[in-house]
Length: 118
Image (cartoon, rainbow, N blue to C red; front, side, top):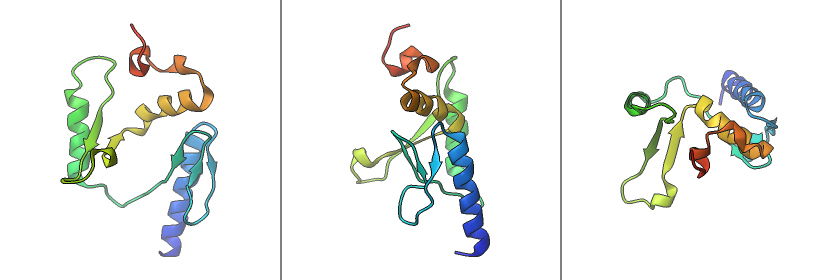
């Protein structure tokens, strides 16, 4: 990896550490990039994300049709275990879940999203 690539990676780690509550940049090769008490963050940056992935997110956002729905994409690799599937969502939609788990204050997310009743 080039010096520029390492610097960009470290810059992203610093951004993520500030973005997430209680986030602390670990920065040790081979370990989590951002430490939080209940989450482990591995940050990756690319020049461009795959078009099909961005298109899927746009479609999920467009299809949500109602208020209060959070768009996400569920990815599955053919012939793999479904327990290894990957869910992708916008960071701004993910942040309230992280904040709730890190702080224990679940009032910051909708009750219907955590199993409550509206």
